[in-house]
Length: 317
Image 1: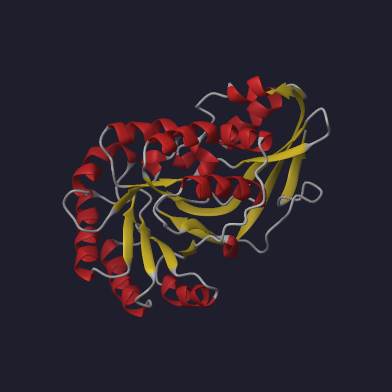
Image 2: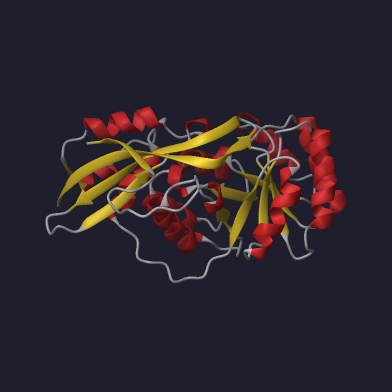
């Protein structure tokens, strides 16, 4: 079957910049896809790369879309190379537009970095969140460990806290965090990606030395990376971002073959990508962990498709 192919770029400004160990992220940019089949059925998809996380760049994704003809086939979509994982996700999502989800989902809410987390959690708790994710590796370790003490003391005992270093810790700092988490022995669900991708062997070793669970994130950003870490013996938690991991059909095949402990997480996509990502998450979640999609408070308002209304449209093809 042939599909008429159209695409537009968008920009969405965060209410406040997101501080990570990679710096401050101010604007989410991406591409909305529209496929129309021969019976005029429309499918929507989204390409939302995070190049510093391991996906292609937005420019590479845009160039790929520009070089495609105005009519494409399923063969075109399933031949997108692994070097363009966000494109694989976007095009497959548009090809198989997901049904409306009726499953009630539990989400984790992203807290701001630093001391601001101490004030931010309560409002989110009132909104119904009971799992929180806090970015670390942004300020000096001794400062953040003091905040951790205060945060774990103030959180309700039923709350869960995920600590996300985005690969920004040195090995000695990671040990300090894990020792502190073991000592606190409360609230903390896992420490996410303490070391950089190249230090996978060290994270594998650390996972055997502490009670606190370690989750891989940047190390398993794409499906080839995920498969590699599994083959190398990782049996801990995998944080999977459907929007950049690659082909949804290949991800399903891998997860159904291997009963991995996965947490599914947002890439700050629009409602188009979010719907497709959550469909995958619902299908493949096995351990009742909160979904990492509690990020709407980082945007002024959510958006629908409308007149290609995913944020501010900047280009059209």
